[in-house]
Image (cartoon, rainbow, N blue to C red; front, side):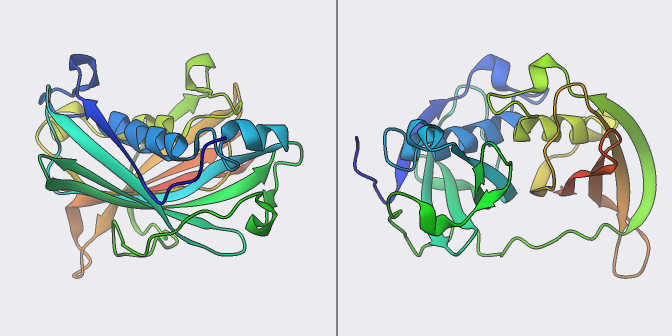
Length: 252
């Protein structure tokens, strides 16, 4: 079994099918990169997938926030680094930086919980079989807080969790919520704007064939007027009658 390291870095060359209409990296693919390096950091270690699977446990992403200074483009090669910053009783805090030729493009911070596979309830991190090496550096300085959407409801759409939405943990993968949320916007609006900052809070898992009502809320500025570049998106699981996710998006 491999020794735990205090950071992990992997390079990704952006492929044509990972682009959006502007030939920039898709937002969903960015979060897939972040998800991938988080898993690779602990692969073949006592806190990785295989070791935790044997104990009936798994990691789940609870919250993540990213600031995009500049989105990389088709054929760019980017370096994605991740490290664990802090751990308390229930939460593990993980940081990320995405760079191209040394230039910082994207910074992110996230919160994770260890879950029991059978009960689907969180476990205390003191039960981990090994200590995670920590680094004090911050990818993104802000703490990730609760989201309290306020503003004017704009649109709502229904999304049903189909086969292609479900991951190996038998629930909707976290990156799928980004697709559901961003598809609330009109094509012409997103074609002319880029996401500058995004936060996603995963409230409760969504299982196969469950329906989620996804609502777009236009935020208000400090004068109480509609802010054309600031939005909230909420997903409500109509099958379980409970909130599934919340998201805050700022564009430029």
